[in-house]
Image (cartoon, rainbow, N blue to C red; front, side, top):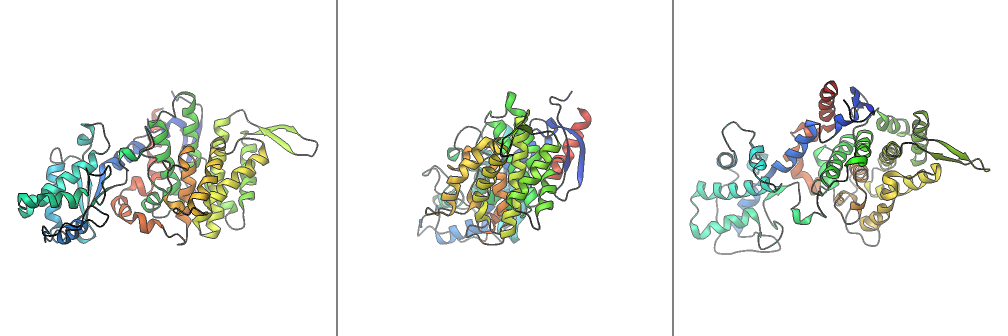
Length: 444
């Protein structure tokens, strides 16, 4: 039997229904195998820059920050021999022939994408296994392929791993994972929240609806992992994921479509309130002498999910009109402020989304500067305080940016587009998760 009475219809990024009468828990990371595949592939997939390694060995420049070791250069044609290197890496990384290891040469030999087997990851407890197994296999593959002598082998290690372990992180490494090292996570369960918006923008090829979905999945998987989605809080997390992230009941798509041509943040709120009133999510608590209506709700988690939908819709309409992502913190801030004044109810994430966007405005483009909105994520010192619903709105804004950002997704995250771009779990997560939810619905 389903755990919750909530039943939803799931729609894709074009407003087409893909699953009907789906129990809410069918989109839970604990039940949905597609969401679990996304988590698995995120930690198992790694990129190796053979072009970067070749250049480092040829020049002696490695480990970042102007480091150069002269007199021990190694001139080898790694890009030309990419297929040979890939075959050696696969032989070492795989557990057995025919397992789920994947090693592919990309960009004419400049890069290799490695997906380490699930058995290798399951044999340990850290998500860094994908990186470490790939990096060590790459070092050994190069040494074996070119008979690198013992006194120069350390150069290969430096070109691949970077300055690690002299540094905490892999400074200057030519192996990349979309996940940060554990030491850079704010706390327990933050790994999937520590993926910046630009990376998601690149993975979904700037499709705003899919970007919202993937960011929401990363955020809510993090909520489960850090213990925030247990007991009475689980339903709230799932409702937010369903309505904001997976376009449940086509609400997000419909509000954006209705307001996209001439709408504003204010008209988005009007559309949202029509949904909330018609569906019985809110009702008038009292009417003041001025005629102002104060609303209340018997289902605060559902109202929060609705508020999150409106927040993303407001960002899509406002930032979409400007084609400039810089306005996302201001849009989130004032959407939520107006919503609270309109209803007398808490805004998205019970006020936290509005709160952190004061700081986000400062850190992204005020007198501080810092970096553009695309560099933010759920682990950032400013935005980490709002969990689950804020970062999807930030991702939507960056998907819709028309080229105004110095720190664009193309500049910061192009490699990850190449690495993950062929995987439907990351390119079209709405459809993939919806398809799996449909299967679960039949069982429930």
